Length: 208
Image (tube, rainbow, N blue to C red):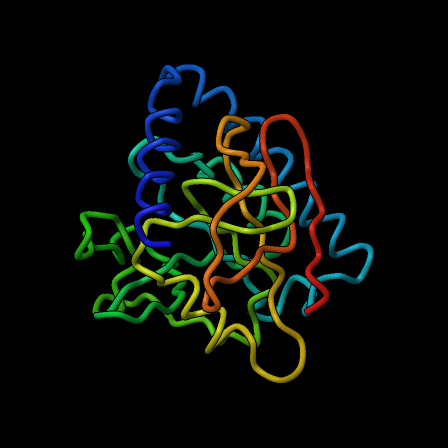
């Protein structure tokens, strides 16, 4: 299983990198618009565990290595009343933080920009997270995800994001070239509820 995942990671990363920077930027802009509209629709239909305001948050991520750039959604989500959170890694664990000030950021252990708790970034209570936007190497239309192998999102969803009561909606984002017909799945792998590409929004509710 590990060998097959490694092979598929190499394949889909190569496919993603084969897209030009301008093509990825154009597709990212479309995905951002779809993402903002999706969050609004999920809120309107009561799918989100918490409404905007009163510290409720949507978690994004800082794009690296040709990932979908979701930064364009941050301003629109904030205008809609959401706090925008980002992942912060600490050893094998991950938590989500909101950085209200532009100086409350640091470069994390993987060379990724992340909120800095030491300079004022605030940890977001998992109970106040309405949705978590998840990057990945590949996704299926059924919500299965192939990550980078670190297991950060899988662990967070299994431990923090699956507590009793309402849990955040999991939104996977990727380019259409990263959609797979099948992916190998281990017992600890966590599914997403929605996959968004530049071509559309794919609901894949897992019945959690």
